[in-house]
Length: 256
Ligand SMILES: Nc1ncnc2c1ncn2[C@@H]1O[C@H](COP(=O)(O)OP(=O)(O)OP(=O)(O)O)[C@@H](O)[C@H]1O
Ligand SMILES: [Mg+2]
Image (cartoon, rainbow, N blue to C red; front, side, top):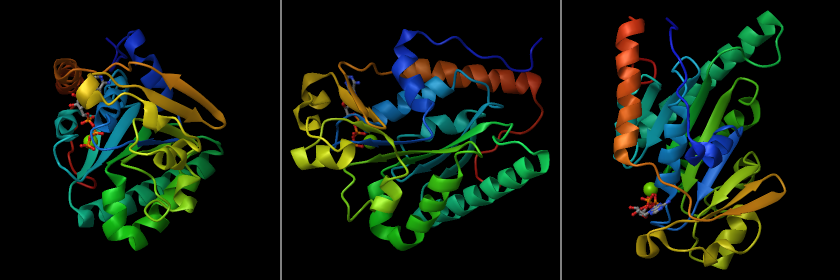
């Protein structure tokens, strides 16, 4: 019996799997444009992999959007307050340093272990209050974390230069623009106009996005959402597997 196994993912997941495979990802769009929905779908895609391959640390200011994922054994950290978030980011840098040292010891170029995704919903919110502390932490993670397999996935309403500084933004070559309020917001995210013309999911009940990877941009119409039942099914699957095959207690807090 395999210790843990991967679940097959249908075609619905193709676009989200590509997003998951990026080193770092920034998702931006106006209020209600579907940022959390995309985030949710990316995490569900990762939940097709065992916790030994994909792990998550959540920085969730609202404390509701990502709460359900705490129950998955993939979740190794969760922070809601700004103070906790900063502590958690520092902890992530420690993990990164340990991984880099281990790589040096083994003489390998890529860390031979799990991918860790640091998921930040509402990055703008954190930056407005804690910019001075958070900027150098994110910068360090942005530059060094690639080989250590530590990835940032950030959501923000719009990466205005005064909120998300260029030194952070430049570490995110992969960006997803959902509907933006203005043309300028679209330029701020994907360096071109167009996202302001996308449908508003709150009134039209469908969402489209413009996905930029390096210099290539692609428009994806009617991007799928993953419903709560499917999410809960995935989490329950791993909880059961974890109970059966692994005696290690499920951790909810970074460093716990
Ligand atoms: N891909 C989608 N297909 C259909 N409807 C969608 C899609 N994405 C979002 N919606 C609709 O839009 C609403 C807002 O989505 P969501 O909460 O993900 O936006 P958000 O950008 O995270 O908002 P906020 O800025 O408030 O955090 C959802 O409740 C849903 O009804
Ligand atoms: Mg949201």
